[in-house]
Length: 329
Ligand SMILES: [Zn+2]
Image 1 (cartoon, rainbow, N blue to C red):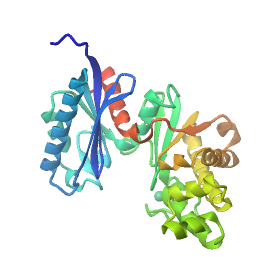
Image 2: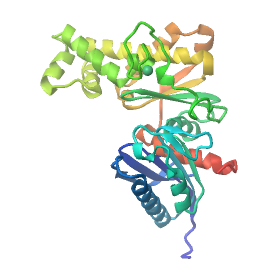
Image 3: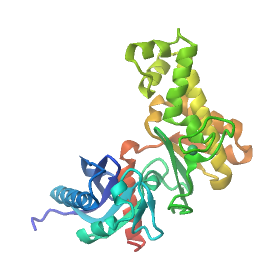
């Protein structure tokens, strides 16, 4: 030993369809070392497991070099897991892993205890433990990207109702005669308030209002994404403001629909959409309060999530830490 004092850390691993993200996270939720590697999800399971194990080895070495001692590994991934969370039964983005012993391969290949969980749970656990939801008894974190994902923490615990989630919050129906959702249902909050819905509505308004800044930006850049919508909004464009108000309002309606079930005290909104800033959050609050049961919605705090794109690895580590503390690894 060189006499350097070492500090414990947890390795958070976020496995997605396109990359593996890893981080050494300390006891206060700070990322101290990080790695990211692209993957080819079509490769055989043995190859992906070998890559994962070498990445876990590498991040542990980096953590030790930074004076940290890894004690636990928390890993999250997309798809369906069996009851004991020892097997991925179906993973659309990682097809070669479905039904295999991938999790066993990882467990046998490392010396530390490992926990596995659904990636959708990571954001809420991360915000509950280290972010803007610290100590909130009934917390919902909703991530608005291409689709909408929601996760719930109730009194520090993840409610595991189906597929280890509290529910598919993005597919709660808010507009039963509204547009068809990618999931096949009609009028899901995702069909009204996702990034995809935002871009579709912006395109419609750019067509309807050819003198708007939205229409000009589409002509200039050949596209209308959140970036262009945000820029038009910042420049005071009325059409962009309307798009943001509408999509925010529908997310608020979604929160109103979740409220009689979970009675959240706080709802944190994360994902790229937060780049639209306070006007967006104001629209979400307006939708919630106009639509929801006044008695239940009056005191709900709606705010931006604090941890951004790192919520996945921080949440994975936080789930590992919680399991280690409760002796359930
Ligand atoms: Zn849906």
